[in-house]
Amino acid sequence: MFTTPAGETVVDFGQEITGYVEVSLDAHAGDCVELSHAEVLDKYGNFYTENYRAAKAKFFYFCKDGFQTWHPKLTFFGFRYIRVDQFPGGAKAVRPDNFTAVVVCSDLQRTGFLSSSNPLLNKLFDNIIWGQKGNFVDVPTDCPQRDERLGWTGDAQVFIRTACYNFDTETFYRKWLADLAADQYPDGHVDHVIPAILENQKTSAAWGDAACVCPWELYQAFGDADILRSQFDSMKKWVGYITSSTTTKNLWTGGEHYGDWLGLDAPSGSYKGSSDEDLIASAFYAHSTELVIAAGKVLGEDVSEYEALYADIVTAFQQTWPVYHTQTECILAAHFHLAKDCQAAADQLAKLVTDCGIQLKTGFVGTPYLLHVLSDYGYASLAWSLLLRENYPSWLYPVTKGATTIWEHWDGIMENGDFWSRDMNSYNHYAYGAVADWVYGNAAGIRPLDDCPGYEKISVSPLPDKRLGWLSCSYRSRHGLIRSDWKLQGDQWRYEIETPVDAVITIAGQEHAVTPGTWIFFSAVE
Image (cartoon, rainbow, N blue to C red; front, top):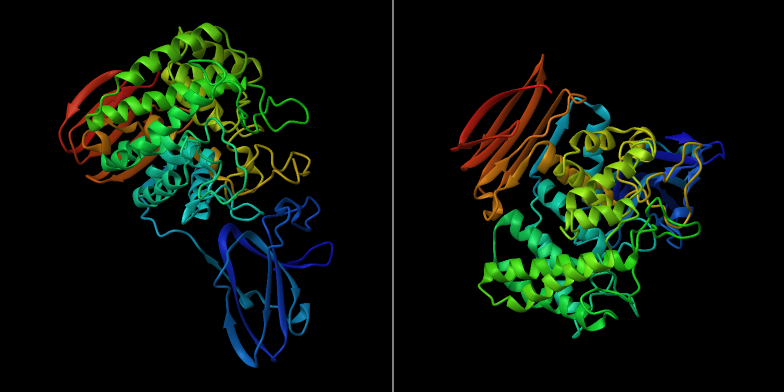
């Protein structure tokens, strides 16, 4: 507890949470406790709430006689700090033990754990967990504090793979996807937020595509085809909506989209990155169609119509966009296998990243796949450089600024202490935490083997980097604990891998088919 330069009495709980404050105090009937909530302090150390927009984030409690303990029961807040605006006896009577911060989140079992030799990276992992806990409160929200707290579809779909590593989210997402299908329009339109509580919503590429991406990711993570069976009609309706609403056959054009939201290459005055919105939309059109095909094959459905559509989309995409101009355009073309030469697209991405000083420029659409494309196409060292970068823009920059959750914008607090924006500047916005799925699935290398959803059989292909002395990763699948640890020992890497099922372990390019157990390997440091 401290007094700010502006004379405010503030309590710092040390961690941004979603929840509420419980108050305990002696008081007289009619006394009032008034609290305000905030995520950050301004650069002068004063209480700051402008980024909450219209949300008042206030707490009023009118006391009875005697000692009492009370907390709100019908709301929650997103906060790290509280300001004591009224208290019986005034500021001098306030004590830290008058207040207890209580976390509210859906009760999900933790399944994934990451740790490393880099303290900043470990803090990033911790922030990703807190960001997920703070935004998984019955629905996957975008943020827990300002005048939104809504189930934004785009955030949910870019983060779902990380979410499924971190926690057992199967029933959580099943419920939300049932809401999505129930709220989906007869023509297949999917609103920006689910449950669809906003009026006159439109839809957007990468947001509405949650209808296809999320069921498939759940199937891959947990292995139950029932989620595909439950959502298959919804998936087909979404692809049908795009097909019927586009202004260009076999592409998705003419719509209104969020684009590469908050991309750092955004034109002045815009929140949208400069990537071609029709390219982004058409890439996700192809991706969702591909997922309908994959889901249909699992279910034994005839998907020949979608196979023909997918082939036509790829052809049209390649004819319309033979070249790419931004990091995100390269990422989507390579990651979704839409470019005529995916290696060339990845090469261009690596050049764009390197030419600007090994910096990312991506927003909500490109960021989740950025490191995947680099490591998949021969640029693993560059992927590690981006992950380990501490200066803005990077995943670790907010950590150096004291972040305890994931920020909405790469420099929500700028180097000079100013705020990037007042209205689009959440400090608990989990989307960029999607990078953890690269750490689980690439750096540690834990993935379900192809055609073995739910980790019935697994692939473990670690990707060590000598700038990190060691990495430890574990994931508790439906079949048991999977563990992938690697450590630098002199001039060699030591790997210790535990698997509860048959696995293919790839070390330095050499495959090893193994049975359940713990296995140790070594490779030379390159």
